[in-house]
Length: 238
Image (cartoon, rainbow, N blue to C red; front, side):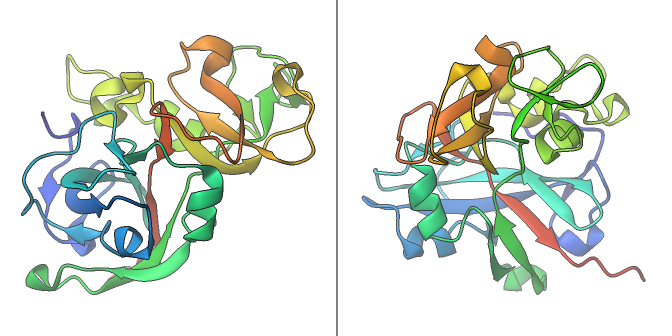
């Protein structure tokens, strides 16, 4: 499988990355998603058997592989795919993979030493209207708030940073139809669903049903639903 089709470069040090650059990162999981799998998800390099499928690794099956983090803004990297599927929001939250936990991306052979927060994306909490306000029905304008991370950094990733002849899907693989769990509690009534705060926003290909917006119970597991990591760190300007 190809590297992300950006105009950037493959890097081996986070400190050298510019927006559009990407870096390989190893991940592994066991028979149960646990702290070991959490800690093993973020070390630089490709010294494992194979690249993680674009549909992610099943979190209930022992496996390992590598994926790519793409730099989308100062101090912000987003994975080019879902890396763990078949895992609930509640499980991710119990591992601090929703709001995030502070860690250093391991890569001593590259002298990295970059500390930051691994977390999930913000995806909005409802549909955006033509006037930029919140609503419960799909207007084909993405999610509200309109500056949510999914729309800002993935859907609106600069076309100038995509290789000629390639598409956004060749960068973030959103057509894999594996929904990404987001941090946000979805607004009551979106997609005509009434709930008591036990549902979260998921995002996927905007050409999918409901504009690629999902309203999913936090206990739900499925092979089409998973975790796409974000690494947020304090970038020091020389």
